[in-house]
Image (cartoon, rainbow, N blue to C red; front, side):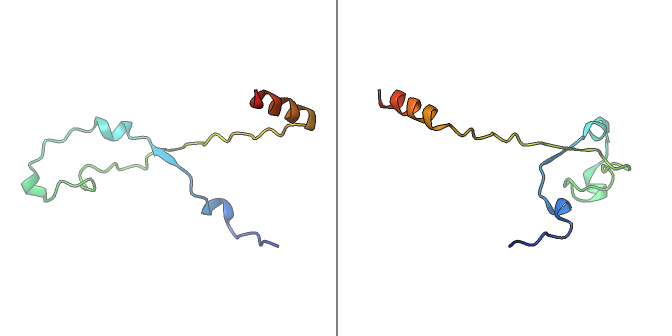
Length: 80
């Protein structure tokens, strides 16, 4: 008997994609020596507003169960 987890929907790991269209439009001509490292977390390049995240839904394939007669027909075809 399994217990229902508290806040189970929020605990799910879901694939997401972040809309970077606004951040890609930003062009900065700054000398890198003046502001330090050029990693992706540079504060001058981060957006001021939260970006929209899109959920990537995974397609689930439904398994189709065959009836006894259909299974027999399928096995005959496979044997041939």
